[in-house]
Structure formats: C-alpha cells, structure tokens
Amino acid sequence: MKRIKKRILCLVLIAVLMLGLCVPALAADNLGALVEKSAEYMLNTVTEPQVGSVGGEWAVIGLARSGYDVPQNYWDDYYAAVEDYVESCNGVLHKKKYTEYSRVIVSLTAIGADPANVAGYDLLKPLGDFEKTIWQGINGPVWALIALDSGNYDVPVNAETKTQATRQLYIDEILSRQNNDGGWSLTSKGGDNASDPDLTGMALQALAKYQSQSAVKEATDRAIDCLSKMQDDKGGYSSWETANSESVVQVIVALCELGIDLKDSRFVKNGNTLLDNLLSYRESNGSFTHTSGGGGSDQMATEQGFYGIVAALRAEEGKNSLYRMSDCSIHVSGNAGVANGLPDKHADVKKTEITVNGKTFDDIKNHANRAAIEALIARGIINGMTDTAYQPDATMTRAQFATIVVKALGLPTKTVSVFEDVAAKEWYASYVGAAYTYGIVNGKTDTTFDPSGTITRQEAAVMVARAAMLCGMDTKLENYEILNVLAQFGDYSKVSDWARESTAFCYGNNILDQSDLDIQPKRAILRGEIAQMLYNMLGSAKLR
Image 1: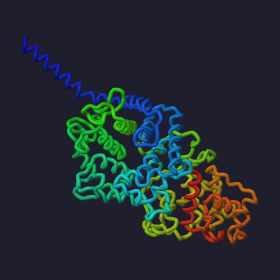
Image 2 (image 1 turned 90 degrees about the vertical axis):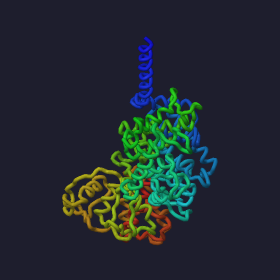
Image 3 (image 1 turned 180 degrees about the horizontal axis):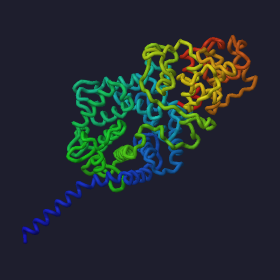
C-alpha cells in the first residue's frame, strides 16, 4: 500500500513539474493576450508620461507599438509635456548625454510627431555632431542610428560641429568598438574585454538595417555567436553577474530587428527560449520583475519587459519591427500628416523610404551638396553616373530630371505616346510619361520632349515648383512678392517672365539658396544643385 502511495505521489510530483515547465510555452502561445494585459497595466501606471527613461518614453513607445487602444488625449498630453520640457531647457536636453535626444526622437516618431520641430527646436540637429554624440561611449552612436532610422530621418547638417556626422561614421564607430569575443560593452573599444548582453543586443539593433555591408554582416554573425554562448541554461542572461529581465529584452529586440526567429536553435537552451525566460519574470498583473529572486514589480523592468513582448508579438504577426516605424498610424493633435506629407498633397504623392543605407561616392566627400545627395541616394531617388562617381558638377538631362522627380514624389509611372523622341523601350519613358501626366514637365514642342537636352536653373525652378504644388505647397505669389524676392539678386531681370513666379517661390521657400549672389537663370543646372533643390523641397513638404 505504501509503495502504491509513494508511486502515486511520485506521479503527482512529476505532473506538477511538467505543468510548471509548460507554463512559459503556454503563455508564449497566448502572447497577444499577455501584451494586452501589460498594456493595460502600463496605461494605468504611467498615467502622465513625462520626459524620462522611466515613466516616459519607453512606456509611450511600448504602448504606441503595441496596437493597444490608447485614448488620443494620452498622446496629446505626452506631447504637450515634451514641448514644455524642451522649452524649459531651451532645446538643450543634455550637454553631454546625447542619448537623451535619441530616446525622445524615437518616442515622438512612434506617436507621429515631428522631432525636427518641437516648440520650435530641432531635436534631430544634435545628432549631426559626431564627437558629442559618441562622447558617452557605445550608447551614443547606437541610439543615434536607432533614432535616425526609426523615422528614416536624414542626418541633420550641424554647422557648429567639428565633424559632421553621417550614418557611415556611426556604423564604423560601432564596429570599431566590437570586442574580440564578438560582443560589445559600455566603455571598451575592442580588445579582450568581456562583453555585456545588453550592449551587444543594442548594437545589433542599430546595425540591423545595414546587413548589406559585408563588414556589418560579419560583425553581426560574430555577435550572434557571442550571445548564443552567453545565454544561460534558463534561456536568459546575466549582467553584472545577476540574471535579469532587461538583458533578455535587449537580445529579443535585437533578433526581431534582424528578422531572426526567437525559436532559432542557437537561442534555445534546455528547451527554454528567450521569450520563455522573459515571461518567467512577468507578474500576473502584467508587470515585470528585475530579477527572479523576489522584490516584486520594478517599473524600469516593466517598461522594458513590455516593449520586449511587443517586439516579439510584432515579429510573430509579421509586422514592422519595434523600431521600423514607417507604419505608424498615430498622430498627436495638431501634428496630423507631419510624418507623411502636407494635408493638401496629391493623393498619389508618397513619402519615399530609405532603402540603401550608407551609400556615398568619393567625389562628393567635401561637396557642398553632399548631405542632400546622400539622402536622395539612400531613398533610391538618384544614382551615381558610375559605380564610384556621382559627378555632382555635371549637368543633368531632361530625362534624368523627370526620373528623379517622379521617384522623389513616389508617383506611379505612366506610359504616354505624346512624344516622338521618347521611345517606349527607353529606361526613362515611363518616368517622362508620369512627369508629363502630373504636369511637372512639358515637351519642348507638342510632339518632342528632348530627353537628352540639359535643364537651365530657371527651368528647374519651374519644374520643382510644380512638384511642390503636387506636394501640397502653395506656390502662388503676388507680383509685389515676386519682385521683393528676386530684386535682391543682381541679375534678376534676366529671369524669363514665365519663370519668375516659380523662381521667387523656390528662393522664398529656401529650395534655392538665398545667399546666392546671382540667379544665373539660363545656366545649365548641375546634378548637385538639383539634388539640393529636391532635398530642400521634400523637407518643406514634410516628405523626408
């Protein structure tokens, strides 16, 4: 009888253990419900989010990316708090820690607000200062890249800096700090230093969009191997010799940004996945603990744990990753349309996304139009003349212009049979057709387009002004306004009558540089100048 009882007791204990082991997997299978519960907890806990690493941006980012039904006033109140804070510190969020700017930029992007204009301050601009951004170590370039890429923002030109930042400079800085074991740590710069899972995960999040670069891909593979080896038998990680929830969150987000399945065999230890480990820190009310040794809910751990499971859910559902925010559908009141164009733009005009990161050419290294050229290259709007040269001081043909302006506005291509000198088989035919259909360009005659002909500066002004009108900008000027703008230039009388309004519009809206001494209206415009005009126009039209 005793043997039977012992046997039954043994079976019960085994069943209990098996059930205990199954809990994380069962919980992970119901990830959507867990995210919803944690979102509810977050909304009830962080009722008035402020600027800050706790009770601020991370809670807002998690909620915004979770898809949870958050009242509009929550976003509006947070944005008002950011405006008040930025105004109170005169736009200087921190004199040395530039991650303060990056964190707020990511949060504002998540709610559809414009970080380039917060209470009149451009929060993107500091990230154009390379030295100041990297001052605090690996965190600086990592979060600068994440922030800039969250909204596909151009690296801002910062005339006050010693070294103008570029995406490539930030990428190279991160790569230069990789330790010999394949990971990263807070202050080390390569060598035999022991790596930290948090920093390694964050570095991979920043590098995720740049896998087409062989050096980045190689560094990523080494880091993945490092993280796999660092993972413990419970599927988690330790930082400062303590197993904690925040470390596993950063690795989860990294794998999701890289498109690596969380059930990848390299990250399953003793049957435990990363997600299983993170959920072991989760409380029944939706909050998270810092460690598994008790102590109850921790707000920092909760905010990170929350956006960690949000990242996992988005990956499971095939949505954009946590930091790829081109799918943002939230807009703070008064900022509607900021991220995707002006309210009155043509329905066919679309914002073009960054698709080629870090591409540049040797012949634009010290060129005045470099930032504009690189920004258009990144969006696939413009190409080099060869694989190694952009030729910024060469002229541009009418066919080339028609092509880049159609691409810049994201317009669908069109086929027309109006021009005898534009054969349907030519690479530019559908772009010329679209530019003509949308009223951006006209033919030289009723039946000819002259695709190989060059474009003068005044012709470019007219065409860019027509493009700006499609983007929702008001291009109409009174005669006195035209005269007031053009009269500052010594050769304004040389501008043809048909081009005066458009030329004045371009100068008045900083599409053309007002510091020019002369307009030179009939000189052939250069490839660098065209790139700058389109770049400036897209900025004014809220399309970059």
